[in-house]
Length: 520
Ligand SMILES: C[C@H](N)C(=O)N[C@@H](Cc1c[nH]cn1)C(=O)O
Ligand SMILES: [Zn+2]
Ligand SMILES: [Zn+2]
Image (cartoon, rainbow, N blue to C red; front, side):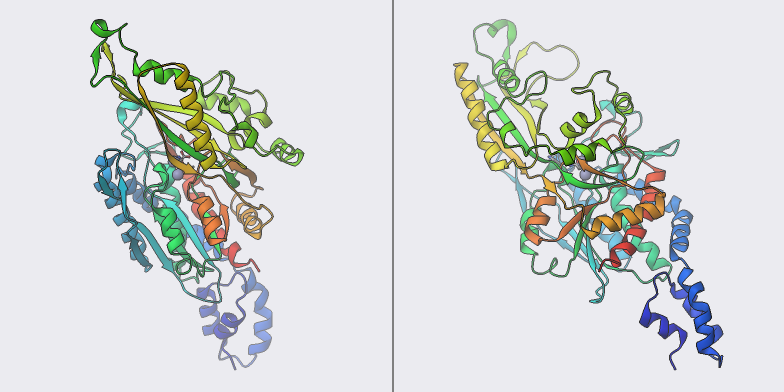
């Protein structure tokens, strides 16, 4: 006769823990009334809920999780600053070590070099891939995240040192805390919790953690293509947690905008000039640049580049209805960002322009005088940096041509002797998922278990450059399962991750792994 332990591992009831089975087996196997007793205990065993055990484990390890985040935030892994590249390499090593420490099969994949504007090359940070579990009877999920960050300096207006995680009133402040270090750690801790309690992981788990997301995921597309028939061959689903909720209500994300990032360089005299001595005689590169940048968008937010607005997929009644039902308070939004007047006054228009319309943002001008104080200079060469967020059905290749042709035509009308060069350095496509896919049902169930509410189904205005490549190359379904708060201040001063979102988010991931395993 089978022991109770064997019976249960064969039939795998939903909520059984190994510990419970071992204990009962020890108590019951000598009993001649085995079958009768077994029938009697089944309901009790089925109700033995490992989530309580797992969630308790998470609650017991909060300070360890905060310490792990502190160590990661301390690394200035800014992918946009080449002088920080050694820190970025160290960050990738730390990520690999953490995954190795939990018994994962880890590889650090060399994705080549990056060409800098001066023609020199620099090694890209290696991509960390990892695998935990290889059971062909289970689904396999691949969790994607990034451990590079946006630039941050205390002088930018941070209240605390951006690289020293600071705990104030339950919020953990630090660059990269929410984007994307805490969510990556939360996934690792979710898997660790199963392991620590000797619970069978419900699915096989793979990780892909990169270090160039914030600059457009350089080198990652080709790695995905190269690994399509190896690393990805047994992956069923891809999970990304690199975005935030829209309100205090948890959310599942089904779309991201893409991004086309441009450099417009205007070159004039061979060096900077005294504005008193030369001003009025030279045609200034900065004036030309401001003129062409001003031609991109009207004060009311209308994109003026011909062809861009025409490419946008129409806004359907169904979408309008969906947006109408989403929890989003316009006044809270305004007060969180500290403005009285927005481009639009109503919720639906605001959400639509945040998620499913393109927009132009002007980010900065390299070569322009920007320090405090007054310098009377005519900069000789300036590079305007702007981006256009992409939505269905825009095509970055088309946008590149539209923007380049348009800026040259505006520049030509100025009859300037200066030289204009337009380059598109990032061309990331938008991504959209099918919310009817069981991955989303699983997300709803996991959110309900942990937060006792239905999640909102939302889109993300930001870009996860690799999302669309994952979809197009691997043909796997993707879900975005955010745990960031709506007010985390990504890319901004005083970025934070709340303890609540970090810890309850870890529990959400624990539950989600279980729900994904249930997908037929
Ligand atoms: C949403 C994600 N956390 C993020 O911040 N992505 C960046 C990626 C990007 C796009 N262009 C350049 N970098 C973003 O949306 O800005
Ligand atoms: Zn991110
Ligand atoms: Zn980011």
